[in-house]
Image (cartoon, rainbow, N blue to C red; front, side, top):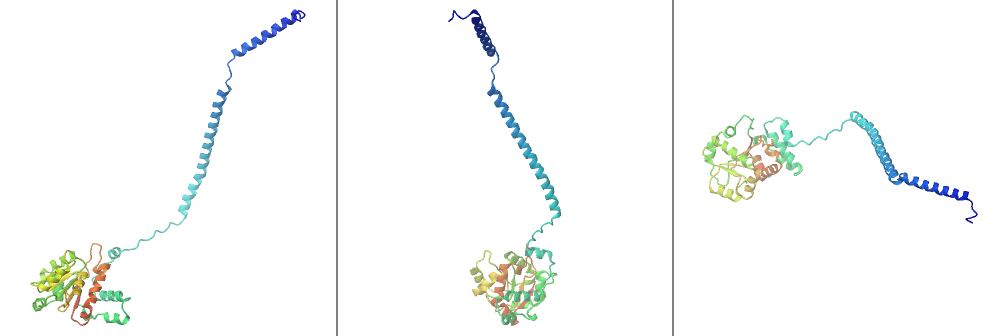
Length: 293
């Protein structure tokens, strides 16, 4: 068979083999294509660019949506009526600070008594609680000192104090709001009291039993104190009202919060308790006179 094939066939075969070898060598010489390494980063870059563009678009869209809302809200705020702020409730201090201080008068005490007992007593009992004008002494017109006021309402004090000989009782009872105010008033009594003895009647640092003993030991002409402690002494029979002739209320004085004695709720309760302990009945019988300082 090999002998039968001609030289031409062998020559063609050799040429074809040589061309194949040449093609293989050329292919080897060409740089190998790296489809994976080149295409992947390009795809990633394109995806990242797309995501960044999409985010920017969203932000721009949000900005475009938000900006008209702001302008609308500002316009609406200018057009809408402003909400009214809730007014704070006025305290006693605010009311008293804005009002002018006026001297107390008997009508003030009368009105306070009827107001307090309006829901506690019947109509007939309320009528019985009303005091006559003769039960009141002249009130302080805010021009007097304490001593000068007492001299005005008790012109015969030197004579009255000499006639007083009862223990556990006083001739003049002064009612105020606190222990500090009690001490102040006792200091202001020096120009008036003369040889009379004055006793502090408040609860601060002093027990009721000690005050009862002091009242029983000697003769006390003037008692100065708070309504709560005075009521407690009357209940325990440490202080009786037999010799009492003058009841002076520290009516116009105000504390740091501009409150009077009757403006403080707890003291107000003690005050009315004191009035009920026998003072109102003594006033109606003209045994006791009331003065508002």
